[in-house]
Length: 570
Image (cartoon, rainbow, N blue to C red):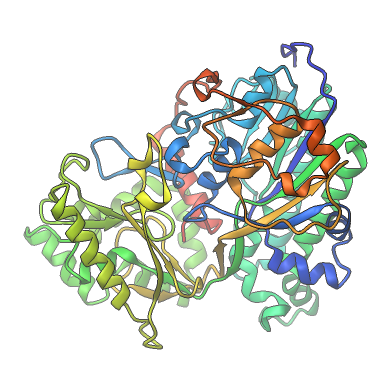
């Protein structure tokens, strides 16, 4: 695996170990119970605290915010998907949609040897000074998933069964197997990381483990701390599932211990997550609510009106799926969908209401994506926009805001919405226009928006029987190494602070385009005096991205299906 080396030898090395979706809400109690000794060591010997995620706390936006030190309005990624130019359809994001310098790109440019492994939304990988292996959102059959390109064949030979998605998908009756598949997949990530770091000297490592997120999406309600358990006659199965999330965190603890053992005294170790996690009880079908409130209109032709009548009567994809599950046919449907995803999607759009049935000439607002993203159908931006910029746009947002404040939980009658957020107050930069016009935080985060399904239900709030955990705003941050203040409680850290902190520790000037700041309060006065933190002009940064990947429509549909099965899209 020959890669150019500019001869730079780092006096300090930095290692970032990511655990997708990890939360202090679980780590804290389990540390106190003596179940996570390595996390306990990090708390005692280093600095630690919560780290604020992006809004919404969604994986591609969050990891790329961490990598660039910039808000989404500057790097351009807001979700798993982005709208296609001149269309209301969406496409998977990739690294060609990300803008700005990354921490590994800046270190490569400075001559440092870097390794980046399994970072979500990093496909296709950048041409770094070292190695890069992309992660989630990579097509399983991709041949361009590593840099250098020939690394992929070596990796598959060194780590049998290597892939970008876990081999199993959660299904009822197979819970214990699913948990073991997740544990094995994180072990595979460890083996892959160890392989690439063993091939050459390195100065910077960034590796991400996904198991903590995936197991939490589907197993949260089974945790003993939630007072729930698996309905099974097998005591061993019940015990394994009740402690499933705990076991994944314990394995994470063991993984960190292995990295610390090989890090060396001059290595700074950051343990991070892109967002936190918590329970989920309901799916929010935001387009159903927008249609009920008259923001979203349907075509007047007979076929669409017939589908709309069926929709009003409750004949929807979700209701059909629930019926099949009740008959014990859910697994067969899922298996068939995996084999014929494109045909099934086309059939659903033909048989049920979809965005194809929306009358865009009369629709003023719609939702698309993770969280609570509301887009105005703005003239001059959307292909069939009907809302005039200026006064009409502002009046529509005020009406939406008033209606959201008036929203009540159907069961309790309590206000449903907490904060209502305008994109202009959250994002700034050349790509801020990609953001939703309006988002909101539910009063109770147990209510989560239902991904990208256009009109899966005619009710705007539905119980979430399949996925019982979802993302929260606060992830984790641990910083360990020489000169880090032991036991220091980090406060008000955000994802944007990680990249400038790494650059400061490694003596590389920080681009002025970064929105974060080095976590100087967590460092001793002696270390801060040694670092001599410097800044550089943002427009001097080189672009190390590769060319647009070639991904078929079938590849994209398979990835969408996997993301949904893993709990990312509802």
